[in-house]
Length: 308
Image (cartoon, rainbow, N blue to C red):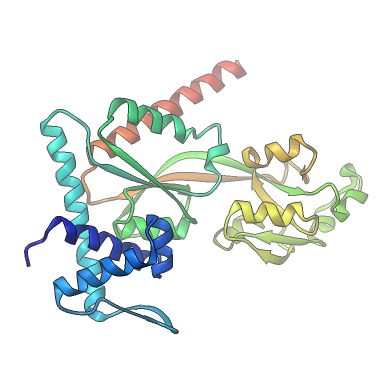
């Protein structure tokens, strides 16, 4: 089979269906209609001569050959991206696509101004493209491992074979409550850890033990997949939960969130840059890392001058 441009487009749609585990997820992610997604998958099946997936009441399911096609497509798209980057190098231009993975609410972190990095890349490499996905750490690691993204910035996570984790910075998290929470009746100076542990906590499953290190006897009554969900629980007035201080700052300034026993029960959340080990960095990925390091160094220098 000779691969045509239309095949690559259909294959990209098929990959999105697999990665979002549904046709609907691919529709939303790609901005296509249901009929367009179905057309591309059917066209690819016709070209290959076999079914790639099944869908019905039981949900979406890959066929055995569909799973093989998806796995082989990872290497194909990585090679295409590398080719585009290499050709750009020959022309002394930075081209290609950088697929960046972030956790939610990074945008409020003044110490990690990703928007400035994006601005620098688009200015220095106008022919390059930047794509950003926001997911929980486990999904970002999975996407990085299967070739869905090129780099991720995420909280420190357990090591994975084939991935490199480079320390970046430490984010401060504190425990918060709403002004209407029952703990308001207790004077701050008299508050004990036992008092705090008597009330329901909301935690993130991937950070459970770290979040409860100061309150081992805490009663976990809710879980949340991301920071926005944690904030909703805490703002309800019924739960206590840890949030990044930069994210909570706006609510604190408006009197809608109150830190609890901070800073003594605050916790550090180390962040890392995750990349694939065996892969040579593309020009645009290399540029991103250099710009990120430069801005991070400049921020550190500014803080040092301010505290001097």
